[in-house]
Image (cartoon, rainbow, N blue to C red; front, top):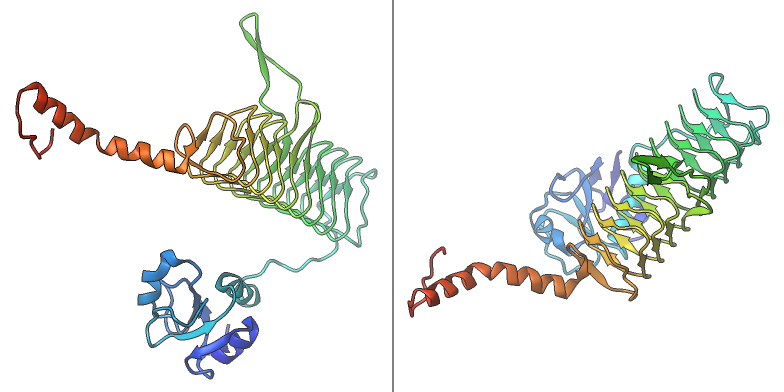
Amino acid sequence: MKTSVGEIVTLVEGTLVRGDAAAVLTNFAALDQADATCVSFYGNPRYREQLESTRAGLVLVPDAGVAAPEGSSLVVVVNPVMAFDRIVRLYGVTPPPFVAGVNETAFVHPEAQLEPGGVSIEANATVSSGAVIGKGTRIGAGTVIGEDAVIGEDCVIGPNVTICQGCLVGDRVILHPGVVVGADGFGFEFVEGRHRKIEQLGIVRIGNDVEIGASSTIDRARFGETVIGEGTKIDNQVQIGHNCIIGKHCIIVAQVGISGSTRIGDYVTLAAQCGVAGHLVIADHVTCGGRSGVIASIREPGGTYFGYPARPFKEDRREAMRIKQLGSLFRRVKALETGITEVPQGEG
């Protein structure tokens, strides 16, 4: 990367409010890691202290009134996060270009449906009988596409992904390395002292524009479908159980676990390590904070929930405050019991 402040201003369609348009920039970095050669951005108030001490050569900001060091050029843009993303896409490390064709070490069953000149099948991938792969889709090295699975157009299926038999994947879906779609759900019945397997004979249906992070697993339905709605984004190492229905445009963050047959509405956010019990309902636009434990349905749209069991935000904060007050309460009770009129201020 070698560019100038003026070229960055043009690229992000911003306004230079401070700095030399001819100054040279050769890198990009976060506010606390940048030096005078770097472009950075300020997109969240929580990083205000980093902005005030940054050494970045140029900072993308939402308005000219922010407190930034005099040595940093300032460029005002509508959305600093998206403007910075445009720079990274242009100058960052990009994926290899799409190259149509089937690698000589890949196996494509004669009864699979695809256009060799319109898809990319990389080394050691397997495409099974009856599978359908849409135009412009890339199948990564070592990936296995099961019998009768259907993958739409312009998808990126990363290395070592498994899409099991009969599962359906929409258009423009991204599956990162190690994703498993359609493994058996966890279903057993305890009979005569043993756990008897309940057959899992449904499928997984993934909507258009879904992205699923590395090593996440989406279990096939016992019957019917496990569904991931259009536009939903799933982080790494997420487990979604059988017969779950996830709505549209949800955000599901790292290490979330969702038990079977739970229905999650549209625009729901489940923060990192949130756990959701089975057979529940979570309404549209609900946010569950990190490490929340949802053990009862949330049927009121739009709330924010924290803690275990997950409770409305204000209720959870009040409970946390009461816990902090327990030490003081203990000292007061102890003082009353011993007949002391002045409550000691030290540790109980």
